Image (cartoon, rainbow, N blue to C red; front, side, top):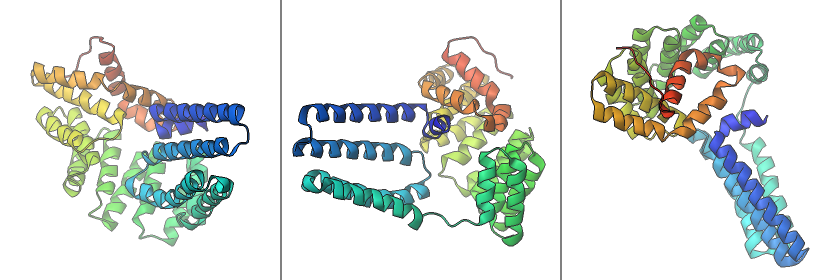
Length: 328
């Protein structure tokens, strides 16, 4: 459980969460020793709890996609407001406001939760147990009921990828594209499957389509630059990865590899100054190296290891100042 939480939050955010818990917990304990059950001490302890909840919520929300973030903000903000009122405005009623806030969160989890069929829930449970065969069978049943819902094909494609079955994963993304031709997500998924299969020209074609559909998003440009690195199209690598970085890649681990591919591209073009700048940027992403180390240790990361293990190893060598070579 803790390992999954660390992967979700990232090692840095996980450490921040533990530090926040320790700091607010120790401060609350000190208040108990100094103030006992006096009103001012209880009020400050309530405020410390609020600080922890706000901080923890911020760390979790920062890792969610934008739509999910909005949904959870709608759930959390009323609860945090109630707790703030209880702590600062009416400390004598702090327990009542705290209970109301926590009650809203519990109720909101039911009010705002996504609708999901029994088949999808079954698939998710099986996936968590790494029983991909059962998960895929559940999604087969779901798709028979809702054959024109593109999101189901995406989920089934991801299950096939986790199971190492690239051909059916490819077919699911192709079906998703038939249903939603304008979906950059579908084209990106197909590009990732083709990359995993080593079919780089096909991967580049799908990634270009995704980038055309979502020119302002970093994911499509990042994937395209990574594929072009495999094709040794150095000028295209530079163009697309600089666009991805300009679009604010949020994760250190992805920035780490973006700078690695830029270093390779500039090195192939014999642009020593630009290569040195990319290397300096890569070395500033040490947190990304740690993130990859945690993620790659998971059982579910088999597909990622097949595609990225050599890149992550080379990034680690560059950070350590070890000599490396690249194919030309």
